[in-house]
Length: 134
Length: 134
DNA sequence: CGTAGTCGATTACGGATGTAAACGGTGAGG
DNA sequence: CCTCACCGTTTACATCCGTAATCGACTACG
Image 1: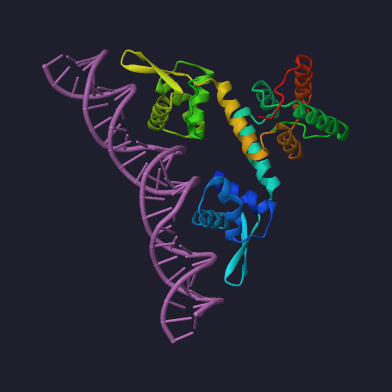
Image 2 (image 1 turned 180 degrees about the vertical axis):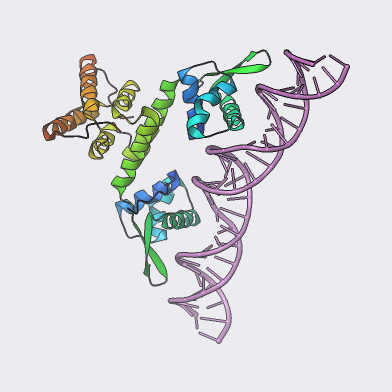
């Protein structure tokens, strides 16, 4: 299935976000996007981009002398994978306890509650969500 | 405030789980608990325990020549912190999108849905949930 | 045609992590 | 008393991550 097993680090993730929001981009453009908030130099961004290419999360496309970088890994896949990892590792693979914790630590706003309620409605009417946790 | 800023790594977390489920324990007992699944040696467990002591996540209590280890960091705090970190980093601090993703990737079982629904009820009747998403 | 700038690639390096062996003290059994 | 087993501590070392400087190739300007 060619499912990439390479993990994306936190710093690399910042670069991915830039590419997800707009691509293809040159290294310099990526830097413009992220060096502001993270306080990195162009050199750092280049390193991260190379590592991401090696990890098959980003691909390059030659444009004259330089490269244009685009994401290969889909944002949804990444988010899904990371979320799942957390739920599996900390909550035995079940989402309900995670939810309980977020609620306890006041990480749920009224807006979240409303949205989640709506989501549950949709799920229920659609019916058929994975039966067992796994 | 005394909020410990020390991060707990994944391997260290496995040791914490052992101590959360039963404590105090000797190093050997912790190993009995975790070395099975993780395929570690006692030496590895000792290293992890020391690091956790340094990080103030575990405390020791002398029992003759050897130590008994107990958790200092509360499980709830750890889970809360990690969950929050994920939500902040990947979902802009809001829990609703995380749930949307878990739902999409079929990580929500029927049981989860029922439990979450019940939880929402409780929250709503209690009212007063943190207004802003932090 | 030579020189300066720009690119990606290579190399660097300190700290964290995973994994473990070696070391030194000490209590128990002979 | 001496030795052995066991304990926590120290040391080890490869990999990953964050962060970056340097290098070699090539282009574009003068």
